[in-house]
Image (cartoon, rainbow, N blue to C red; front, side):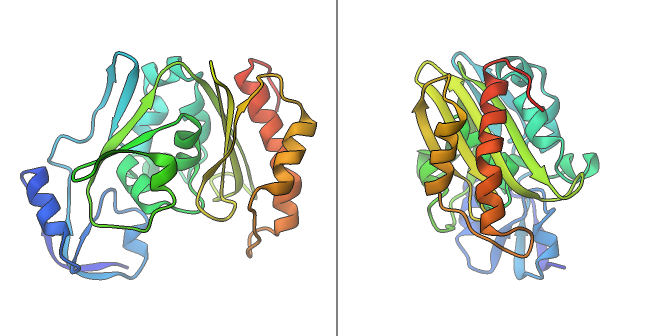
Length: 257
């Protein structure tokens, strides 16, 4: 279990940022995975009183606040309408409802977990991370960066893309063995893979909407995949084109189990 000497609720983002510059501090976000890691820090910084829990629709984009929960995203009517129910598909298998009511957008994005269903879907939707000091940066770049001490304020995702997510698990609510998220927009089909088992990444973009299984098989041969105690590299490489085909079929409006 993680342990802290003091637990602080900053009154402003500026205060939270200043506190977080100390190596003895950590932002707890939803504190779902963090509390299990055995971390010992002097100061825990809780952002829950800073108004970062909203989901707002702004013209051609949605902004997901850092403290919005995964359950908020999963059940949000406007997100479901705009993205074809992809958030419900991607997030509902994660652990359980109680967990998703507490785990946050900011915690998921900042942590860049190798098993993240959340990051894969946001990458497929061309999301941008909103940071206090640096401003706005593409999630695809942020995913590759080392952890730093900036504060995640939220995520912005553009409208105009239909999305879907497919994953394979050993059992319901388990961590995924592989995740594929797809989105389709005017620039074609975009695919992202998570639980590779490394950090989620975009593996294809600008594909024609009618890309076939041969195209997905070619992508799967080259994408960086690995093995761990949960699944071998060979297994993931065999499963990847199947998940790509299923996710692509879903964004085209073709139901495929």
